[in-house]
Amino acid sequence: MRMAELSREAGVPVATVKYYQREGLLPPGELTSPNQARYGTDHVRRLKLVRALLDIGGLSVADAREVLAAIDDPRTSTHDVLGLAQHGLPMPRGTVSAADRDWAEETIATLCAERGWRPPPSDLIESLVVVLCAFREVGHEWVLDALSHYAEAADRVAAADIAAVARLRPTEAVVEGAIVGTVLGDALLATLRRVAHAEISRKRLRD
Amino acid sequence: MRMAELSREAGVPVATVKYYQREGLLPPGELTSPNQARYGTDHVRRLKLVRALLDIGGLSVADAREVLAAIDDPRTSTHDVLGLAQHGLPMPRGTVSAADRDWAEETIATLCAERGWRPPPSDLIESLVVVLCAFREVGHEWVLDALSHYAEAADRVAAADIAAVARLRPTEAVVEGAIVGTVLGDALLATLRRVAHAEISRKRLRD
Image (tube, rainbow over all chains, first blue to last red; front, top):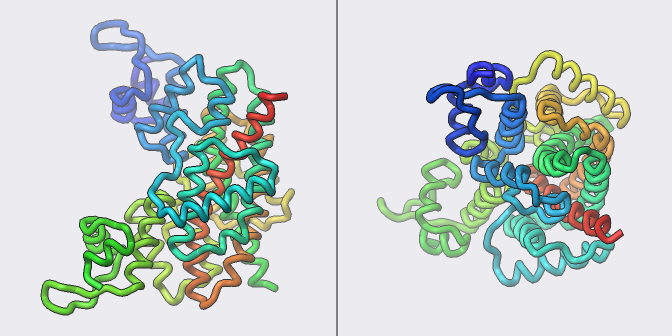
């Protein structure tokens, strides 16, 4: 198909398709003349994926580029993706004071012991430290009262994710599924959390 | 305190403090001369909150401005914040086809019936529709197999959130806590989900 049809099929304006190509998010089409290229269903699929990562997942163009490179890299294993949150999946980063860091690391160690988790990879510990310290910095340490519920919920969702994704075939679909599930799954979980807030809040108002 | 001390106390460069002031994220100090202003501990607190909303919560400056306005508005009730996800808390938005919308709305109705949730507010339904359709668009409908686990996890976290936040005093702290908890809580939950992915993935590799 031509660029115009690709644009229609994926529901993405031509100018945006060209922008994604320039940014390396979409591979070039097959040149049929110096000024015309042909695109296939893989391009439609990729375009929809780019759209979902940027619009729903909230990734930056640079992050999306890294995530797509990981999907395309035949060396990427499911374990890499699900296990290590690398490959440009954006994680909270920031600087914290030494005292706050000690407090956060102790909190994390206690939480892991409680859940039977081994010490997480260092980049994930760092992200947890930054998020916990952010709560503390703004004077909302009440989150500690809810922390074990957060961890249990995360465990439940992660187990369901991995069970569902591991059934995908072929293997490349598993890697893509893991990345899509991580990025879009955050948006799904955040939205369902707001739905549950609304439901519980209405129940409390009524009682 | 002077601007320089405010900057040191909050760990935010002076240029950034001035930028936040121009953008309406930080109220002006008390003028002590035409060129000098005095700031108090409330400014330090607000500055840290702005930092957390932008850096950890990933809010845009415009979204942060709306969220802070909701915190400062004496008419904002906890129910408003927790219940209705309004006030600029960013939610997934996008356009979907009529067929995809029907499918998503039916999926949501089934999920709500399963969990005993009443129909959610329309803006939350819209967000759920958009996220579910994004999974479907990219060919990853496997998320449906995990959906009830997501909803149960969301319920558990929301109940813990509301129980913890409702204990805060005075009432203004409840509103701020609800907003901070919603924004930073998403980051916490997303990070813990990656930790759980890592743990489960390592276990699977070993077995």
